[in-house]
Image 1 (cartoon, rainbow, N blue to C red):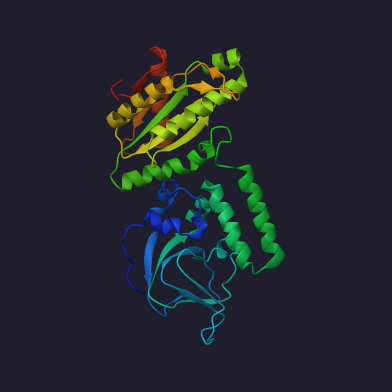
Image 2 (tube, one colour):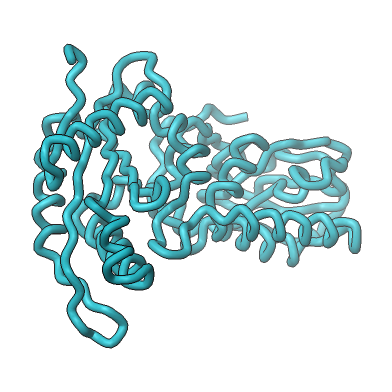
Length: 325
């Protein structure tokens, strides 16, 4: 086997993968950051018939042939960059029925079963892409189809995107937060979070109606997305509360971002479905920065405490958690 290649995975390599079609590169990098990139030499056998695998290989470069036996001259099929190997094995855990051999020097991303299922669980698009790939490679008929239908129902039920705001939801945050923290720890990178609350939202709903409240919350969410970086991750935490992860920014830098965001929201015009103006809203933001050995729940608690300080000091403000308090 050739030596592992330590070159970092690029967004271009990810975007060409069938499994990650229409998936935001920044949202899955926390899950892929620990996966190894491996070089496979020409004529090297990657998978043997009879192997029981729990690994998916994404082909970054090169080419592989699928053979029923090493003696066969003509391959059953060939696989190239953007395609995957082993995705069926993580579902049925059956022995491989063919050999997969490198036709030329190749480069692959190795994804273990746990990470693969986390990827599927974190993205509706990946789940759908997997179904497309599997539909082309079915080898166990109705029993596999039944399992796939069951998985699709599960992912539809546990969708990771909030229908109203189009932001990621709490379930996605629960799955990804610890991984983002671990990646930042590993890369010696700072991480700050923001808890964002729409001021007096209950009064807004009671006065103008829940439909107007939905429009206001959706407008706030889209404005936040516009003012944050592509690598910043925003979720609907619950009700009118939103939560953002800002890797690479300390509390001071995040405070500057939050002030710009607070001002932008206060000046953002809101209109109903007929285009009639609705009252604008303001937000209160609490900020906390990750410390060593901190867990996600603690970081959320600190940001929440800072946000309530902003609300109790007059709303439409930004407050950062200070450890001496």
